[in-house]
Length: 197
Length: 197
DNA sequence: GTCTATAGTGGGATAGAC
DNA sequence: GTCTATCCCACTATAGAC
Image (cartoon, rainbow over the protein chains, first blue to last red):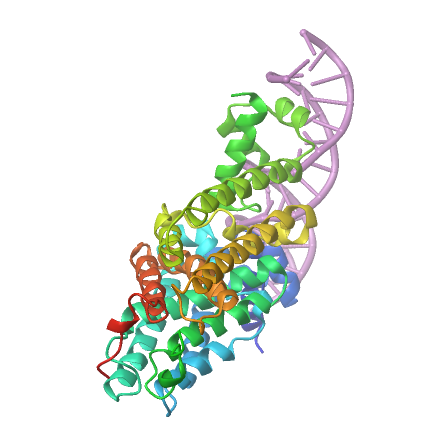
């Protein structure tokens, strides 16, 4: 791995752990095993490095999501697979956490990949749900757009709850909750749901 | 308002806007119109001030939530009222944002009110849902605990999506989505839902 | 490409006068 | 209670040697 690469990787890690404001060039260099001269040779400064790091993280998230959401199979199973894939719950979402960083949000070039990631993700999940609805797997009453927003929000909010509690339990519970709610809209399982009220 | 009070209030604002790491004693003093001497007379330091500020913010959130969730009326309407109450979406949640602050999470006394707030909130909403279920407003199939976790996560995640997009639209959509999903579990509206699949 | 030296600014806090 | 002076260290970057 080249020196520039190591710098980007340590920036990604630190951005995830401590955020933009909490990450110093010094810390980045030390973790990368590179000196200041090296860093400022390859990058114009902290914002430039962050740009590279955030871009890479966003791409990665998107690729992982596409692999699961674009797989064959019933729509709800693909969404469930994406919800269950989530790992390292207590570390939170490396992209979502950036929304809490005022300096990231203030810089249009830093912010854009964050905006784009969630815009794409919500749209992609809405597409999967729409497909499921068109195939008759989901009832026509289900709204793909708002449901997709709820699914993504449940994930992002689940991270918040897990970090607050110091345990992944609430994350798992929130995910289980939204999937359970969805079963009422699944044509293959709804027969079993809430019939005895 | 006393000087100590103004210091706490400006700390609350800055913690909300910039987080713990991004907030300096200097900035707090300037916003409060107080000098360093004043600040260090009333508080032991930045963590001490943050403790006071976070405690106050947590109490406030809890009181507001209790006013809506503890009101009379159908369970789902009370939950909907709480979901719709949310304002200042783009500023995010003053408590939830603290979960992204490594220094807050590392200090047990700073972290505790954050943990406690979400623990209480999820439990309170679960209680409302359980009540609705026991009253026959909601179908027995609905699980109060996991549904409550989903509701709270939708809120917290909605903030993330809204901030990423720079617009409250996705927040509103996520909230609408979860409420729509819930209608299938409402004994007074489920008749109309998804019957024509 | 990478190193070391240097520099200005602000963070976070203490001390002691008033 | 509040003010000013002072302190040390980290942040972020530039300059120029190697």
